[in-house]
Length: 304
Image (cartoon, rainbow, N blue to C red):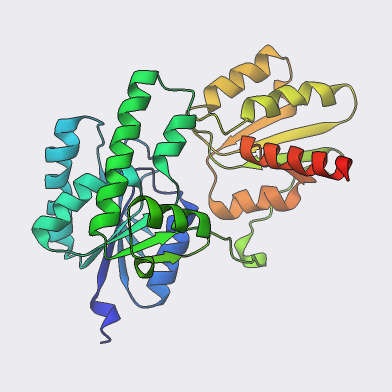
């Protein structure tokens, strides 16, 4: 038995699981390298609970954003789970749970890896769906979590050089503790795609991803844009995914009388979601940041 085969890594996420592409890729790499992986996910956000997922064991906790829960209840829950599963290393996936996870690892004397996919306090600042009072509270919590996480973590993972620079300079972290691992999708082959039979006589447009709140996601504009196409071509929008915005988007499509042109598939397994991408003529990335970048590129090309 190799040393790796005895090591158990626990991944803690504030979000749902499955699906989570980033966790799935990291989990798969660790399992292929010989490690045991346990995933601890938010039960309230998860719509399709599983006990196992592609070789990893999955466990859930109920989440409540309250000081008592985050500082006392959740650390006790996580500590019990980690101890029961015999976890050797914690891979912290999301900033909002850094503090309760750190408390649990402190008592169990387990080292922690802090995986910074996003700067949460900035995401909170840009979220127009929450009140100013809650926004300020969340920003303070996320900043404190970033400071504690970057201070105690043995290793810090980030997705870009820009985030690495920010973390090193904001929290005075030695650069050797920060490792840049870009969040890229692997090259697909035919075994990764489940064929979806869509009509060949229509122009097919798809979006695949979450439908969660946040000002950066422009799915309502995607729905509205369909009204422009209705009188000009035979088309279908396929919106693949689920989230809190889905009922509002379905209602908007009905109000605009274009619901016959838009199909909401809901959650789909990853292979089938890839099938929609493969079968479509155009795929959308309706994010405000991407739109701004495109506008900058267009403006620059016009000025040259």
